[in-house]
Length: 427
Image (cartoon, rainbow, N blue to C red; front, top):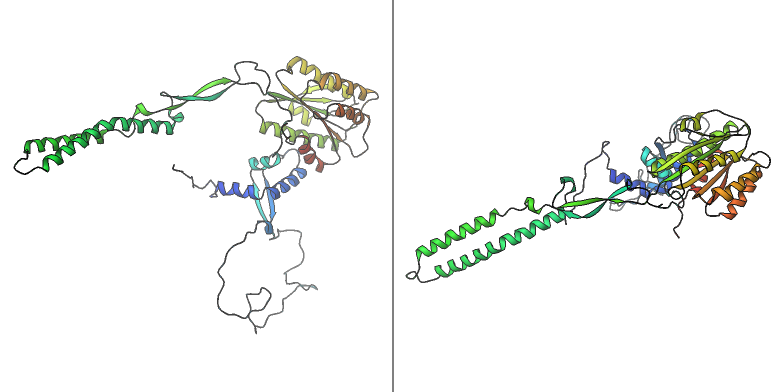
């Protein structure tokens, strides 16, 4: 078997293979830098690339070097620049310090003890969403025949060059050459044996006409043998693809955000960053995931992406209005038998009196039996309120499909997000 390796440099004259090896080797250090970058970014530049740094001591590798050889006397320890008897100049230190540096302290510039490089947008998002998935994603029943996937179905004699099966084509050509050359080789061997027999006779008994006839026959058979083509259109085989209906893996994510008066601007910014991270995760990792954005205060409203992230609205707080709207949308547009249903809710936990009990009842009786996964994020530095206590009852009833976490500051967003959507072990 022959292997072809593409050694062409990429656009920046760097080897993409070597770069990928570097990213794999120092994945732990890069992921740490990426987590720090996610925590300090604003919601408007979450998906751009990032310049990351790795301690230089962590990328050093052992190397072999040739020693100077011979017998030498040097100043120890580790000093290869001076020998015994040299006079050393006193280091010139500025100000009252005793160091050998030049100038005073500065708040600018980069140290030489770190190796810095830039991750592209794709590489950055790969590290951000590494090891994450939508929990309990299932293949639903076959809805229609439009959802198909091309699958291999053997080989055929007709097709386009892009689908040519090189191995099968060469195998057919080899078999054809063997079949076509076998009788020619047999006749050629017999003719050569007859010629050797005729030429081996006594010169008196040789038949010159027979010898000339055998030589002509051998020349004709050799030309026929060379005329057998190496490959012919008859030999070509193509990969045959057919469209096979596939079970649906469609999913819908309901993003529910509290925009009531109790949610300060800082709380809303944290909620928006959480949902933007969720939006990028779904957009990058899944093809058939729809997003439904719901904002609520005393009343809930389905909005588009622009209004969800950038509209300014305030009011009281009735969380059950959002849950009721989600329930209605599921009933009208997303049958559970055909869709994987997910809900992500962000709130400060403040709710109208006795409405938290209503929320618990709605979740237990109507929503949770139909949902794949429900996440609740409470953005508050204070003690939990009644909504959290009622949701704890739901979490006890559905431990695998209901998750709730608290976010105190922006630095908690990414760790909480990874914990909520980390890859589960298959049972």
